[in-house]
Image (cartoon, rainbow, N blue to C red; front, top):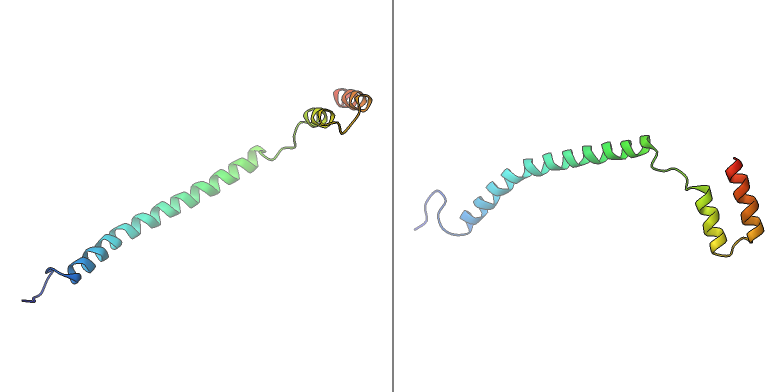
Length: 85
């Protein structure tokens, strides 16, 4: 016998899913807005602190010397220039 209300069957399942979705949607929206706000805040904080600074010139010079890109004499003169700097 079919009647009104939440009887057994597919309509009961659909009503349950609709209620679940209607409860989760506001929560998902709030979580999304909070996440977006925090990510924008973090990006602004990193830029203002200076995260994108250039690497240490002496370290770059040591890497170039270690890889054989420059000679020992070049390394010594460039190192002196940097330390006098």
